Length: 427
Image (cartoon, rainbow, N blue to C red; front, side, top):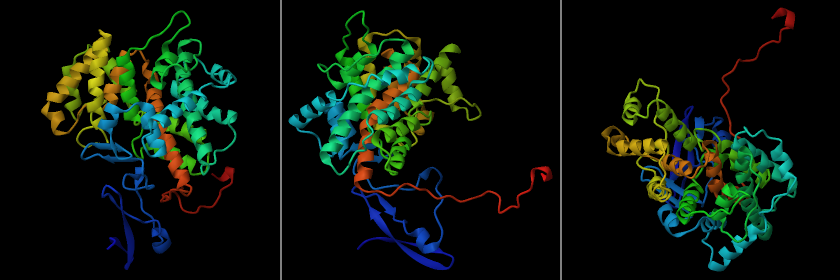
């Protein structure tokens, strides 16, 4: 027998159905609440409101579980590559060997970016934040691809996916090249997707570039770990914008802007800025750990704990090992990274942090890896966006295929009641 929920309001009882997910999550379906009762719910930040049903990602913050399409993040990070996981998220199943090969080939067909895009990037100063440039370039792709995607046409949707995956990687690296004053690079069809990222970023005309296999593998894991994370701020933004039937590039651009914020994708940038602050003030990790535990001290330890995961971030366990391998392989002697390792060691042994489940999260370790690779701090969120791209595409595709209505939250007005207008000389 189906469960129902009873809501009593103004002396009347109303019955609402309860929806149960495939992992036993339950939700009260209140889509007819206003129609039946005349009232709405108030939920700032939508922390208790489900905006949709989705088959893409399952997350349990209490138990530290993250799964893509039913596959554990641990197994995917260990056994799959980024394009395999991208295909899984977007199309629902892991690709066969033939499908994966075709997917890679079809992405390569769309990696050439229109030369006129260079005029757009030339209009930005070198000091422009890469995320601002990336949002603008992603939106500008709409001008070069004006035809809207028919989501009901499987072939058309597939090619739109390949085009987005191909071009986004290139323009994301162009934001770095612009900031450095380097010539813009092009995709190399003889290399894989993640290896291409390293070449696009770091190869210069004066000599060939060869990425370390350890580095490529670490980035592959990072991109997988960032690929989707349920209905977070940027993903919800992509779905909200897409619900107006805005195109894929425009919707992805809105996700880039949402990701930029320090409370979301900018968290790994905030970690390195914190480490640099500690270094500039003497590098005493013990002192800053004490400050973090002092409730009267405004200092906050960035990169520890997570607003969703109440115990541990499953992604952090995976990327910690990769971070250790990268640092060992590259043999980097960096005082900033030395402070990070000291903070990590102190937090993992300190009862204050252990009792509050304030463990290093994925932002902490990803920042360490990016720093070790020589990626500037303001590029960290661009790295996050590259990883998150397939999740955004999958969520946009699912929302359109489900024919979800345009997003239109309600509000409770708390401003002035009706007032009479006064002429300017009477005010």
